[in-house]
Image (cartoon, rainbow, N blue to C red; front, side):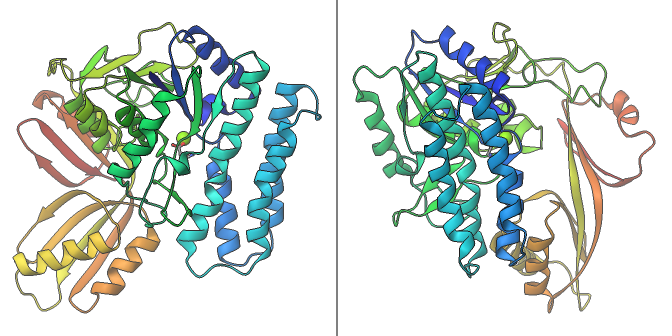
Amino acid sequence: MKVFKFGGFSVSSAANIKQLVKIIKQGKDDQILIVVSAMGKTTDALEALSNAYNNAHDDTFQLLSGIKNYHEGVMKELFGTEHHPVFDEIANTFIEIEWMLDDEPHPDHDFSYDQIVSVGELLSSKIISAYLKECGLDNKWIDARSYIHTDNTYKEGAIDWAKTKTSISRLKDIPGQNIIISQGFIGGTSENFTTTLGREGSDYSAAVFASCLGAESLTVWKDVPGIMNADPALFGNAQKYERLPYSEALELAYYGANIIHPKTVKPLQNSDIPLYVKPFLSPDESGTRIDGTTELNTDIPAIIVKKNQTLLTVSTKDFSYMDETLLSILLKGLADAHIKQNMIQLSALSVSLSLDKDEIKLKKLTDQLSEMFEFSDIQGLSLLTILHFNPRDIDSYISGKSVLMEQFSKNKAQFILQ
Ligand code: ASP
Ligand code: MG
């Protein structure tokens, strides 16, 4: 079995969904499990809806109707009539959110976020399943919440691997069913509530399915030619990798290359399943293959820019040294607030950390530790990471910017730039 993942762009319009069908037709001699994201920017729109509901704003139904109109527009273009049964199915899927919106905000905002935002993937997968059938491609729609089992950490569900593997393995024996379609990004708790796996988590879902199925490969279809050593919009001479080892793909994703979700590679590496990143609009091109046998080519530097960074400086209040005990309290605070640090630098009386911008999480941290530490932050920065750098080229990467923090190791140079 092969696993194909189609992101928001690939399912954002009737034309793109037709392109998806073309790709499935080309591969239909294999058994394929399709994992889809929500259509276009639907997750952003549902996030806005969830915020409005959680804060009891009165524009929830207006926000919802924008989302409905978008989906209906795409369906009309695909099916040419409003009499196709999928219109009722989609209307019923929306009813679940409507019931919630009629109620008072739920006290756990993360819980209601997941119940609302998860609908994007349910909608897209139902529309695409119906359209594949319309095109003569019989398929089975499955609800990812019955296969990807998580704990109840809403917005960041942690996968119960043993249970998930047992459930997903059952998909191997569906007789005569060559195409299965499911959702990325969502999972279910043991009480049958919906969780999400973190923004952009559909790649990760696809890797979980591939790994638990022991799939032949996972292909992530994207609106880029493959994995590049730099963002071509920022660096004119960016080049595409034909092949990459897992270890390098892991690093690229970790430092913020916007190609695949950072959690995607590990499950594939553990099960030795190759990952292809291929261009959705030119499916015959080679894309990039990531696997465990490719040798790392250190001649090409990887240049990764992670935007929206906050540089947080944490100092001790009483001018005592930033020792192991204080450091461990700070790190525990970060973990409790679910904050991931991207770069850290220690000095005698303070620690500086680069964090993804998230004011709610940052406030949680600073409130919790305000008795022990002084906090100050600078927002709107970027983190530049260069792997396999050539010291001669460094100046060209940072010219015109001010460097607020830097770190060098043998293979890696990092800068916080303003
Ligand atoms: N639809 C979700 C998001 O936009 C998950 C994904 O696309 O990977 O974050
Ligand atoms: Mg997406």
